[in-house]
Image 1 (cartoon, rainbow, N blue to C red):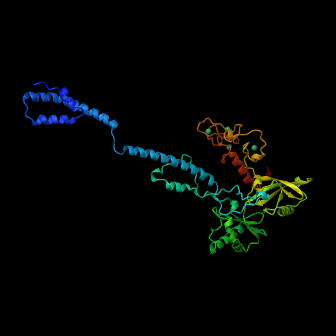
Image 2: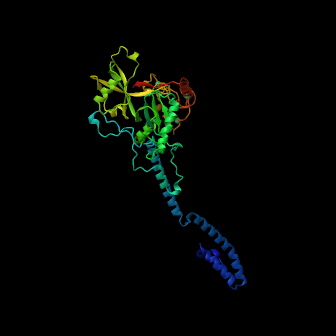
Image 3: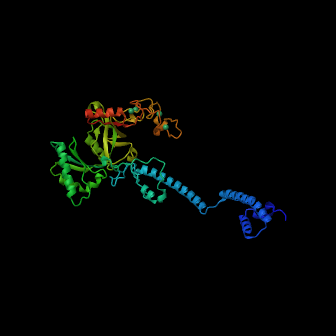
Length: 445
Ligand SMILES: [Zn+2]
Ligand SMILES: [Zn+2]
Ligand SMILES: [Zn+2]
Ligand SMILES: [Zn+2]
């Protein structure tokens, strides 16, 4: 009997086939074999098992790289899809955050006095006032977008810093929240009279069936005998206009000469007015020559009588009802007293007004006499918008928050615009100590 050669006789057949070993083992146990065959079988079983074991190891190693777990590709595909959705949503959120930031700069008033038409008839096209920004009705709110996001994506956050939210919503400007009653005589005790007035109007507001508006929050009697009432922060005083008669009635014990709702005013400086003219005459001239303009306060001279002494013409501050600029007014001068009086825009400033050029307090940028710029970030002599920064990711300019940061007023490491600057605090404290009455100054620019 020829020698049994496992490699030669069996290898081709059990290459990658463990079944061969299994049938060989079955054949060994099931058959009666003579001693020589048994020895032969045992002699080949050892290398055969070894061979199969190696073979299996090899197969296993190969499988680990090509192994296909059902659904794995699906998971991979889904992950890619998810990443794409996250990218799209992040973009949307960024875009909407930008929109929200521009739109929520201040609340859109519910009602507002109609803007005064421009003087020039050619410019009377229905141009919206520049200060109003209507909310696009189609833009979804941030909350709606968040709500639309599938649950598993709620962790996605815009990389932009979230706007600081306040507990109380942003109020309307005080100027849009006043109801004013002019009194003919001064009360003995202004504070006490103001308290009484607030009590009376709020009793009327609460008890009157037609009034759904909330009570008023402040009452004050000014030095010029105006009883000034302030409505709640989330309301405009114009929404109280229908109740003016009711409020007047509630205040019948006060000597009311006139009542009105606060409106936005725009002030201009009108130059070259003959010093012989009276403020009342100027008012009449303007109202006669420009019926489209509604005047607020009676005009007043910009300078003192002493300063006007010996001058033929001088400037007056005139107040128009409504918000406007020289551009929206549509004129650069007003004709009165047989002359063209040029107009300039008016700005107000006080001791705490900070100059954007030299960073000191007490004058507006337009009035700066400094020859060099002072950076509000680092106090070096360059405009703040040119402030450099070594940090690559920094936008530099005003947004830079990296050292060296120095205040040119107090030399401490904060920006000159920091509202907590001790120099500013000193000025504010001084103003309070002096109880400085009218600190604001008027100027033409
Ligand atoms: Zn300056
Ligand atoms: Zn700088
Ligand atoms: Zn920086
Ligand atoms: Zn400072």
